[in-house]
Length: 317
Image 1: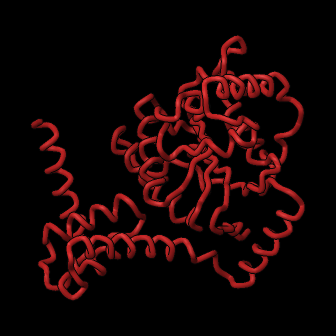
Image 2 (image 1 turned 90 degrees about the horizontal axis):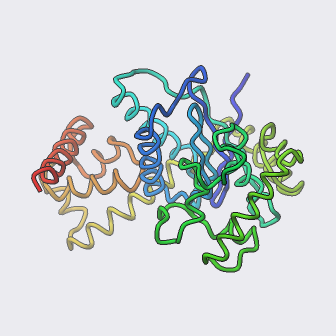
């Protein structure tokens, strides 16, 4: 059976879910949860993703994310691959961590309540799994974005976007009173969760109006007719990297021709390469070619030595 095409477009919203291989845990302890969220933050920096909701659940995770650029596939490739490598390295494991392809439900972000529905579904997961006692509030579950919503804005991760869900709840102001109203609304939803409103999230491929679904079907048919998936993701990634590279060169008052005359191990090249790796998902091959740094191995070694020096300096301080 052919794989379902990933539909990507600027501003798309997805409910992304994936389980551990053979339903085994993907988070063994709090340090793994923290590593996952740290890696997610790095992915957002690279891709410009905006996270509306998340929940980490032992052997699986849920994300509701928005892609201002059409880059779900490129971003998820880096994100899941990086977290898997870090998890395996920490626990001295090897091989696959996640089970097959991640599920990505496309969500209608038109403001008709679909975003709220999918975020409620994600935030109510700990209650469904009995990880939170019925007598205790959902905000007590640490590894969900819900307690972050109940905090002051200055205490939230920069990559968590809360304004759209607050708007969907008709909360006029992100204030203590507004957040208390938000908490009460979800707790009321929790008490009546068996109303069947989540069926489309569990079994469907998109969540939205009939018009929205028709537009997605037309887009999918176009992609299937072209016999390839959407190629904009790597293009958008490289476009961002080119912009950052040009900004760095302008700051150094340098041209591409001058860049070519620098040694391949020049400290300026390494600094630029490090920034591009942190803020985009470009490959080592792209860096080697665009920065004229030799081969992939040389670039990787330069970045590794730079990171080691930074870590050693931190420890000495």
